[in-house]
Length: 288
Image (cartoon, rainbow, N blue to C red; front, side):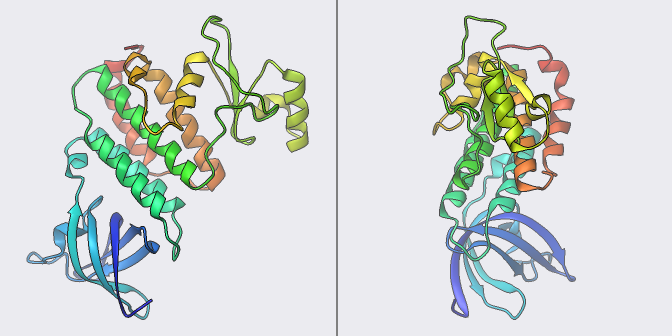
């Protein structure tokens, strides 16, 4: 890498450094995750100040340093300012930014991760805020969609189309109100609980844990259908007809799956939990 190099990057994290500097964690398509110093940005007249905020995308000119590289110039390409204008959007954006930070690699190109993160942040930003149940459902659906896609680009998304135990395709049965499938975080996806003997044998092969501890939750036909939409480039318009509670369950399931397979706790998930609790009277027992 040359003493001076260019990169396009989105700010994922910022923290104070010294009296007036800021240390940024930036995701770039060219070099993956980089940590750079933004000198003097906490001074009132700094030209870089606004360019170091969360979610801002810059074209950067960076100089190599002994321990930390430094930003020489920054030209803003996009800022995703709409995310900071609503607490729900901001919480969802921070959630995806933290996930990208923990998925991204240092010193390796992360082109797909970079563009997917920006795409999903833009989708959340463009949601039309209204104080109705549809808005909250769309927010959580978009968040779950983004989580799945970020996991998928790194090759660790859960299996949602086929049974992890049998390899057979699973189709939601909307005609049977008692129909369910299991989801195993350890096994990596959905499991057809109708084939109990096969699943029990499979789980015993994985470990000495019994069958009941391997199935972490049960999903009904509607919930499986939502889960199976996540690999698609865009969510279907049918999100308008789905349950808010179902999407919350999908997001929480993906969160537990992510935390287990990556081995860390998603701290920013607490923000979305706090936000949802604050609006719970509006959406309690609500189906749109």
